[in-house]
Image (cartoon, rainbow over all chains, first blue to last red; front, side, top):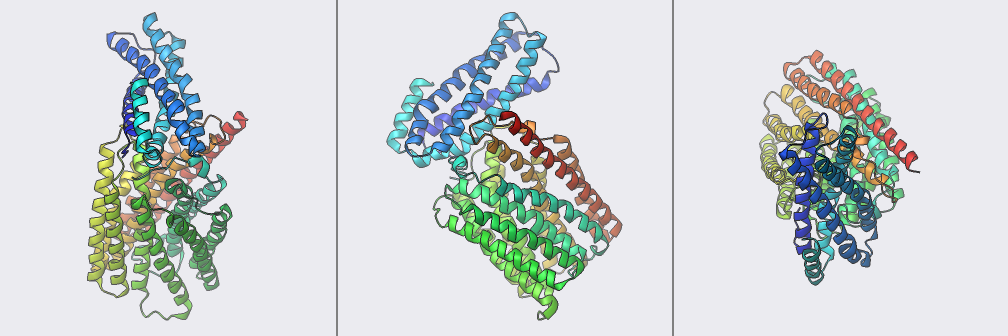
Length: 166
Length: 425
């Protein structure tokens, strides 16, 4: 995505980190036919996954809904705000569920059959919903920030982002 | 910035689903009809250099029925969200379909049965439908100053549309009146403007939006998009002009300029692919990548036609590579991705949770289609080169089976979307 705004660049970097995490999750789920044994490598992966999903997804969505979307709403761009907000409502509980299951598996020393099925199903759904969501944000939202947000507001939003997300 | 605003305001500008999907459903049915007609006319295709009959009808079922119909539906849906400007009244989009679709059916029946009145009536309806489309798109483009790469290609496509429509009507009128001393040069110019001008330019322009979105990559710089639009425009003027003037060398020069433009286009698209965040390419890319290979190959075959090398072999091979090779492969690849994409978008347009695309898409029919389409392309090319009607017939059977598999895929998407919608209520 080509973006000239500071806020767009920060969101793009966040998207890249999220996509990298989701691709690792997708590859992991694709490799496992049944509940895997918990070794040091898997422990590290699940801990990282839980942290990324909790920190990045929640704070990223929070920044957009509390700081960025109001700027668009003020300009009458309500359609995109409603669509992306509704997607946040679908994705966030999934992300939290996957994070909880990952953290639970680390704590319990592995997945039991039910926890594994839940992790596999909710993980696969999270990957698909979040990637579809990022596609929309990369091609629409970031371009719109460049087109519709003035430089002063962009600087203010970027500062808020650095303070609240990173 | 390419693709800017593709989604921004998308919900405000999503057309009623019945508008784009009536075009897509028509294209899917015509896809089946086109291969079936090719099977009927398979014996006439080796050595084919023009003339009425099922071969010509099959060609137009594919070009007008599948390729252009898909592009009309996609343009109606994509342009307003890409340009962030309204396209025009919804009734005018529907009117396009009501004029265009019966026109294609009549025209192709007229060609197959060699019936003049059907060709005249069908041709007029097709041109009327395309004229409504062109007015709607031109009105939209006149409000846009950004997105030069996309709009540049769409302007080139509209100019080519004007040229191909005039040439097409001339060719239809000439069937009875016989005022053209040689139909071949006009038919060649018509094919160049249709395949590389109207369809080709739209495919290139929309690729600058769609490909980076699907793979999550850097967009293609505006300067590159402007350059490819200019090169393509120049190539079309030179190639079509050379063909009409009967100068193979000039037409070939147009082909060379076109190859340069295609090189710039493909290099930019591949650079975007290199920077993609989404490492795993979705299955539809197998067709899109094949189409990218067949695009320059079709131009090379066109150069051989222009330079007069064995026209009984090179002319039908060029048509095959252009229409069935590059364009049909590309369009069926993109269509299998944008149908579930749009269905998913529409399913969440009123505040509900969007249906997952993986729950809409049945992959096996698409794999069957991809394999059978590839087999059809190879058999067809071999049949045309060897002069074997049997191989061409086998290609048509394979293509027909693939088209039916594609229709199964599309039907399942709509059945599953309906089930999701009933469950969500």
